[in-house]
Length: 183
Image (cartoon, rainbow, N blue to C red; front, side, top):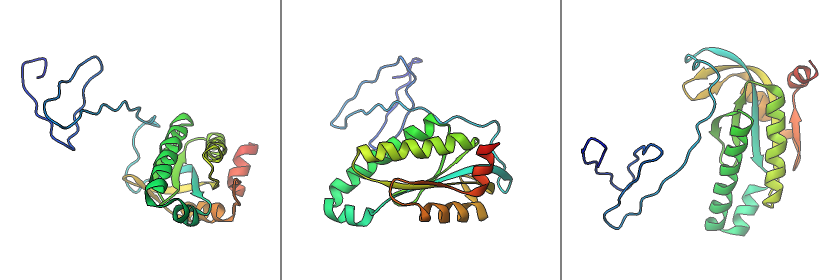
């Protein structure tokens, strides 16, 4: 029941925003799950679809993920991957990155600061090692074309190539990223 006396029925799988300081009462066998969430920081106004923006891209990939998944089995692999994804998202939030997409076992993210992108990549690498996995990461700075929640352009291809050249535990950066870091 809401403050104004209105009743609200929330079924399994439904999502309802309960403001802080409010309680909920559950009737039935479905448990209520409360999730505290922190939204990502915005960089001013949202980009217009098709708009070109200068950004720094980070692409991560778990090294040897297929053999690891085969060794662990589906259930354990999904658990490890979910844990890794949660931790990567926390690091993206900490370094003010914006998740663009997941790539099976990796992430494509964009940053408005080159140093934060590189620091985030290094932090994700250290965090992954604690979980017994290694990532490779590539960082590239260039223009992308924004499309709703996606990015397109040569910069995406370049960061993919840069990441593919990194070894286990390595973060490789492109020449354009290095130039920005050097000032």
